[in-house]
Image (tube, rainbow, N blue to C red):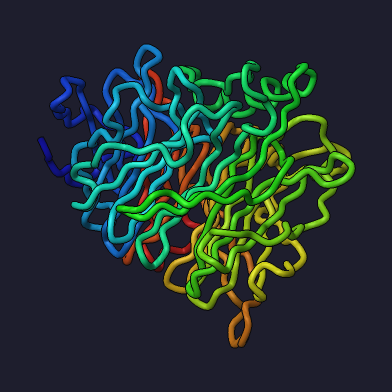
Length: 456
């Protein structure tokens, strides 16, 4: 059953007296609403979290994970009008409960000839990365496939996804197959919980820090697979011995170059950002290039990775979080770029200069139509909020000369964490996880083109 949800005006963008409830074929109750410029996407009775978003023109697809009694499924909400209305959510995975999601491990979506979704799967024979395609814009998905060999040891997850011009899906992920020999028991990644989004903001730090003392080594390597709609996945090892629970990020440039970003472990135990490049459609990758000498020394995993995007001119943009030393140490988000295909990077720039921020985390970046936007969540005395900034080039510059605009609060007065961002033909779209009356929900806000970034 498919229905469109139309905008309606209310006094607060996050307040509503009732929901438009739709019955799905599976029997679960699904709800969606649009109030002003904010849409709510959710499965009724579920904990909804782990959101990603993609846009091509006015075609927008939002994917997230919905958990009911330890059973997690992936859903997609589709808009054909730039996020003004959304159809009823569609279940993506064909095997019920075949999903796992945490803040750093949301399902990922990309739009090209097909709509493609990738996610981490929890199954009896070990952690897997699964992928499904829709040939009708997201109305229905084909049965999912596993993008690597079955039965591998170790954990897998923290995946990223991009499509190239030929419709080939490129997926990068962290893989523990080389850490745990056959017959050993790998530690299990944290499952999605029903905690409020703000209480789980930093939960992964303590959970994964404990892994460093386990008798099994916590080695994680980065792998990438290229998957055509009808072809066998072509897999390549991208990097070895990287930070073991920070998400990867993947982008394909206009000339077909494939870039993968990740948090590397540099001597000795420095957790800084690295980017590696492939010029043969993901079959082989060059040596990792350090983005910035942040020198974050940590005997654990920050569980907070990078985000990259490539613009039409081939400029590679990256946003990431790192530790800033001072009277009080804090985590902050920075931006850099490369104009030479990832060989060198410009000195880092802070995304935000607000004095009362104690933590900035979970950045996502998008480049579309000559515009670059970064979203992140941050913690202040007022709680957790989602922020948005536009990065522009200096007027009259013949090369990319970035300037960071003022930050806009997109989550208003309500808590928000783990944002995602995309650009439609008429607006910037920001999605995030927010607390609801029961569990949590996915909110999507449209920021129309031309809006001043300082306005709420």
